[in-house]
Length: 372
Image (cartoon, rainbow, N blue to C red; front, top):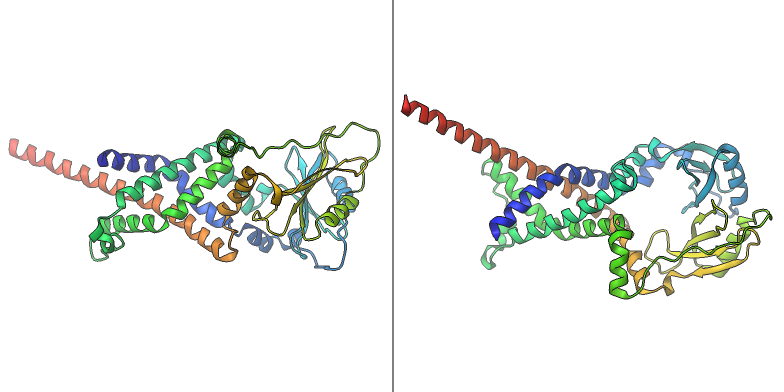
């Protein structure tokens, strides 16, 4: 059994090596993607802070539509800090209009992949291949989880060998040093790598695996269709008025995003993070009739079923925001550890294969010499 597990760990690691190396490096880089992008593009992503000013979302949307008249706005990403710009996402292109949330002034237009961090996120999540790439990443994550479990089993020491299990023989040859470093770093980072792989796979394969599992385990699901709005010839109601009403219902809540209807029958959704929610963007919604501004439904994540409560932990755990900067830096180390394990595992295999080939070649030459 041990020989089988060694072969599984070795060759599954080789198959996934480049994917896990890329995922580890890009995952580490995008932990602080927002801060990095703001530093690289301050005029696009930052504004003068106006703590006492009211955000003008209606004006913002009007100016955004003028800047990109050929498409419909689908989401408004609200600023989470006073000096942040707002973003309006248009479909189907994914183009984003960056604007001053206090005046509605357009600061610029950009597709996410026009930025370094956007490219890193697209590779990390989608492998530059859209929904198909996202599913592939989900299966790769499950492969990483299996690799980690098998690796821990192979590493697990006997009772009297715990000190040796965490030691590296620095004075030995290069192969032994790399082998020990691979073994020890894998053992130290195993739990966090497994957690990251599991949550990443759960997010990437949500409809295929996660939602059915949650329904099977809790008897409840997380998917709830948006409220429907009868078609009408009336103009769009004020988004600013809807925001005021949502904030009056949840004074401690922070508005993080606004969902806009792009098809007939769609409602306006105000997404909020309430005090006590673990998800960084919140999972609470207030849905409005797009024409009358009437409240259609309120989804309070703090009162949601068990499936929603479990789901709310997946993204924060995967991104490391649960404990603030400390856990985010820890997540950076997890990504670097995954990249190191992938590289060192491949290096050990190549080194061993070359050594074996060299030994075989010497044997052949020795045999030819004897025969001669």
